[in-house]
Image (tube, rainbow over all chains, first blue to last red; front, top):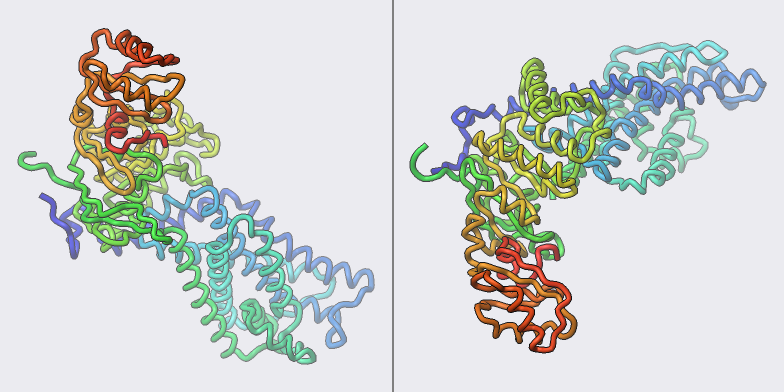
Length: 282
Length: 317
């Protein structure tokens, strides 16, 4: 005879309670990602460092040396070197979301199907998606920690940071979570052949118009742009980090920053989980 | 164990309609008993993979119930995952990990401690003859080795039921035999196995019972021997000839002992009782009717013959 378990008494069947099994599996999946990261650490560092290091090098080392002005009428070269630190860190966070989640997922769904075994682990499918976000957010924090000193060391002029720890310790995790959720959303919606398009149509505009190389407040002379960029989640990541690292520059109201960061993280997490489930279940 | 066999897989009117009104599985009622190797045999598109998908938490049923190990799969999918192991059609090995790590982390996903997972991984590597490849990249494995690793991984957490979707598709004959041997050992150890295949030989050799599936429905379900008996003939002669094959088929119906004559895939198939001197009689009869026989072969009834009897078409179509 076979009895169907409606409210399963799991111990009877020699099974582990679903919640406990799911928590264990979640931890094991994180451990798996950590093992893969440890193996590919040199690659991780290279992909994390290259873009911001070059950016900081050209704009805050080469330009001052060759006498080409940057920073605009509102600020000196020294100010510019300080000004872009938060933006460079914010870009590192969103790039990590793309590189740690979006690109691998596009491959796994498109060709390799290797996510299969992780999806069959004893946790809900949304749990696997959330694990992806958490794992990428942790990698984002690591990336930010690597990029941050670069932006402070490379420039010819000294960088003046005035760290507001409570803001930094809350904004940085939120920003990396947002970057990771963005990555999950992209990774579950983009087909392999659309990856180049994703970069040129989504990622490049986001980084250039993300209040990264200028404070959002300074866009006032171009009112329409100042409004349009508000749809860009990177704006709030940059502004939040600006409030945390270089509060001497104008930055958005903290309530708006936290509100938008939380709202975007929630929205993109929902969209990412939704996309993930649609790719995994038919 | 005594008494009635325990059904560890059960479906009740299980149905899947894909978008575009494509009926993939049509009100399937199925019971697979504990310790059985059960085969779903059918051509591509018969609904085998969709059925396995609905039993393994991946394809959401449109209607009906799927129950594995007493657990309603769609009421408690995460719990159901604890009792099943799955080997899918494609290579789904984790390419970021080595061969041993694929097993080790699978153990961790299913709640083993590090030391338990290490031990289980090492035992599996020995048992599946992969020990010398333990540190290899999974990309470096041959198709047969990758398949062995996938089977090893799928049973590492000791699931009650193992699902294999087209396990020998794409394997060379030697690897296929090795796989059959492994499945035989698992069967002896009491594992319940459900596999899908479109190789009649695989179904015939491995399975205790076979369900012949086409267009989302089960057409026949029994032991391979019983299914073959339903063909009712001792011998099947396949004839290739020049000219009008339908006319040849009608002509051969008059042959002594002929029970059934069909044209399938440009070959005339004659089901006959008795096997003595069959070939000369067939050739003589064909030539007497003015047909030129170009090729001729004799087989015993196979599951393919059962399928053709049921559907009028070839398994490979």
